[in-house]
Length: 179
Image 1 (cartoon, rainbow, N blue to C red):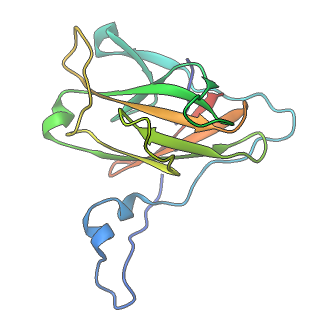
Image 2: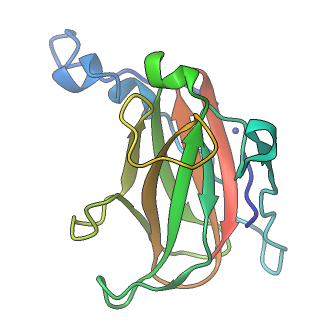
């Protein structure tokens, strides 16, 4: 499991200038322009390496506050024609009480290609173009750690090199994975 991380800001306003409901909920401000750059033909996929977290109890990628831990991509039986990676996310226990919103979007970097997401554990839910993680709303837990966690699916049409942009109130980061 290897991965990579990048920053900017946009606030959605209604035509009258008042903040819209989506802006007030905190997600609109995280919809920054995608900073995912296409790779040159024949370029190697710059997969983001994973690293130890929580004193070696966990292993994730990126700079946080939430760290993905993707599995290998394989056929996704629930959505024929797609491949998927069950991906666990973890974050330090302090973010359970001091929550962060993490907006995740992605695209293929080595050619055109779709990427979609599901927030678990409802695997029958429709595939979405973005993933919204709130650290005060964990799903499941890890043994031997107090870190928060949730489970998701990264879903793609074909194998290739994909970039994931994570936007939080702290900034933007990019993680690169190979499907």
